[in-house]
Amino acid sequence: MKKLIIASGLMVMISLSTYAQQGKGGEKSNPDERAKQMTERLATELELNEAQKKQVLAINMEYAKKREAEMEARKAEMEARKKERQDQEAKIQAILTEDQKAKWVELKDERKEYRKGRPGGEVHHKDEMRRKGHHDSK
Image (cartoon, rainbow, N blue to C red; front, top):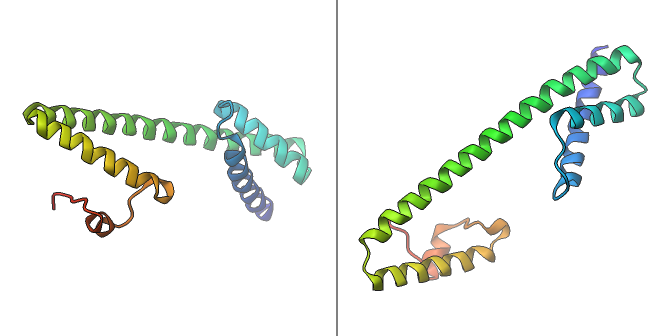
C-alpha cells in the first residue's frame, strides 16, 4: 500500500507538470475539476479500485485547493508590488523637471529594450548593464 501511495504521488506530480504545461493559455479550470481529471487519469493508468479512487480524489482535492490558494496569494502580492512601483514612480516624477522626466523615460525605455533580448526578459548580470552604459544607484 505504501508503494502504491508513493507511486500515485509521483504520478500526480508528473501529471501536474504535464497538465500545467498543456494548460497554459487555455481556459482555466477550477481546483475541483483539476483534481477530478488527475484522479481519473491515475485511476485509468494505475487501475485503481473505487476505494483507492476515492482516497486519491480526496488527496488531489486537498492539494489542488492548496495550490489555488497559493497562486491567489502570489497574484495578490504581485499586484501589491505593482501598485508600490507605480506609487514610487509617481512620487519621483513629481519632483523631476520636464527635462529630467524625458531623460528618465528614455532610460526606462533603453532598459526595457535591453531586457527584451535576455532570456525570460530578465537582467542577470548588473555589470553587463554597466558596460552598456546603464547605471544603477548603488
